[in-house]
Amino acid sequence: MIAIVDYGAGNISSVKKALEHLGADAIVTCDPMQIAAAEKLIVPGVGHFSRCQSLNKNLRSSVLESMRTGRPFLGICVGMQWLFQGSTEAPETPGAGIFSGECSRFPAEVKCPHVGWNQIECNGGSRLLHGINNGAFVYYTHSYRAPVIAETSACTEYGGAFSAAVERDNIYGVQFHPEKSAETGLKILENFCAF
Amino acid sequence: MPSNRLAKRIIACLDVDGGRVVKGIQFQQLRDAGDPAVLASAHASAGADEIVLLDITATSDGRKTLTETVRRTASELFVPFTVGGGIRTLEDAARIFEAGADKVSINSAAVANPALVSEIAGRFGSQAVIVAIDARRNDGPTEKAEIYVAGGRTAPGKYVLAWAREMEDRGAGELLLTSMDRDGTGSGFDCELTADVATAVSIPVIASGGAGNVQHFVDVFSTGKADAALAASIFHFSTHAVAELKQTLLSHGTPVRWPC
Image (cartoon, rainbow over all chains, first blue to last red; front, side, top):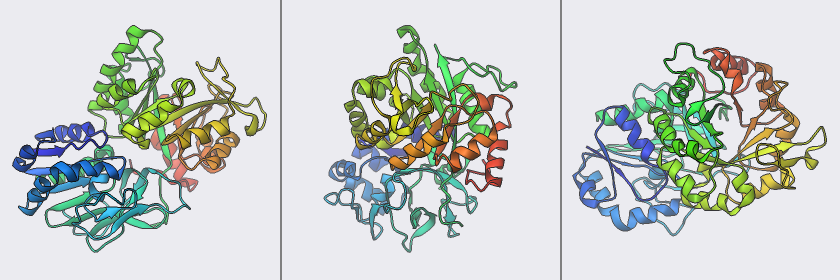
């Protein structure tokens, strides 16, 4: 059972729909008990980083506990940004601090938000991105992005390089929307389901 | 890898009336070429980067079927999905999102109540709000181009450039700019108008109206500075239309999602 954590950040039905298409058993929940019981967690999200405040307030300990016990975790978009220390979009809202660094807005020389299909450059060895070609296109829609760090497993160029995907042990994050990235995205979700 | 490969998007538009696609019966192999769900998936498989479903239903009875149509269409669609037509309130938008759309497109309702754009953006994020602008300039300069509503029948007396900036300020995530001068003519996108609007705002601009051949897309992405282009009938010639279009764009140096 995969629990999709519902903390009021945008449309998450599409993630559930994609998992169901792949034959996975998934629920959408905001119940700490269900989160604690789930074999895997997905924290989706699109929109403002301040929405993570409700994640921090009610669900932080159960989500972190799930990660600590080695269960696979996938953060999508704002859900990935939350894995970092924070974002300049909402300085008063802390992230989980799993990865070091802070998310920040795209520089003024590029159009913002970054909307559409862009390419990922994979570092190789990523379990989540196994079978994904270098240069594959994925769908983005965001105004803030995470820096490239040691745990970056793929990056994308847009006003400089940013983390398209991060990965350490059982914890994964993607800035793009796999549920909206056609076959490439479904393959990535399939990899996660198989962990 | 080049420093910026953000792909120019090709968006397929389905006009739907009472739950049925009314224009463009194109994919001959389909068991039901009028079913939006079947047609949307076919377009996505053929390489369209996004799907827009535009409900042109005039009656409230027909309108009620929209939610169910959106739900069925979204269920097996794994590319971005926008729904427009008849969305007048935050509740209308919420219902469409709940049914599985990623974005809503609003036009007349934004003119009647500009705060609606901020309301939807505030609740669902700017990325979920496209403001559709129907523009006409009658060969005049873009500065004098006005917006139209009610299917092009009414001019509420607003200039396109100022309106585009206002919609950006109110939280629109993208603009869908249709040239009323070119729409249905097949004579090409209005590149001058598109470039002027794209330069005036920092959010993406989707060009619409006038696509007749592949060169028109090459032009709107280069001189027109469009971030995406929307077309309906050009895709109705064959199932390979999108792939052929993208290969031509690539050969002109336009970044597109390929292979797709």
